[in-house]
Image (cartoon, rainbow, N blue to C red; front, side, top):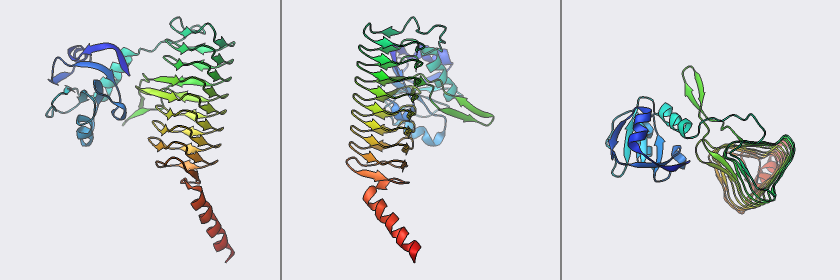
Length: 304
């Protein structure tokens, strides 16, 4: 998530009551969780075994709860509760805004877009030209929808990320400050759910088509010209390459990468990265030819 303008580190430290270690004139250009960070971003770490990963990441500013040597070119913010500090920055930059009318005054809808009855469009959402949003669709805050996009009835675009911090007394939900980006010529079928990211973007690439009842978790990236059949579910931060085909009821775990032009057959379960250009089947999903040989062998064993 990028800020609308760079923010001085001293202002951030003052807001969250943190001690600055390192460059006190640093500017923050954005904020992101560790696997999404870019140069200029703020991130956080509150478990010592992950300190080194955070300090060596692309992040420029790291919030942490123990004083350590500051790497060159970075700035550290010392805080007793890094998660709370991180979450408060996102809440400060992306405060919650409830809807009390169908279309928020800050939303931008192109004059050529068709918006059917009972569509809800949240704050700062954008709907591109010639897009068609069918009845009873919910488009949440900061969603960007391109040209010639069709979203069928009952879909929810930009629901909160299913992402929690675990405490001894229970789970605390992160503020979802990210967005959903839907590129040009995308079809989203009826009753789909697309979660926005915690602090970056969930993306559906140009020309991709989603059947009904597909779920995309927070931070999922769907490449260009992909086909996802009904009841596909994809876990958070997984990335699909271009021209990937997922048949009905395929389930894909979080934080994985599926290569270009991979085909995954119906009811398969994916628990690890898959190379592109191959056909997969089963659970755990493996190359279909090998899986069929395994099943044939099992059938023969059963006859003995």
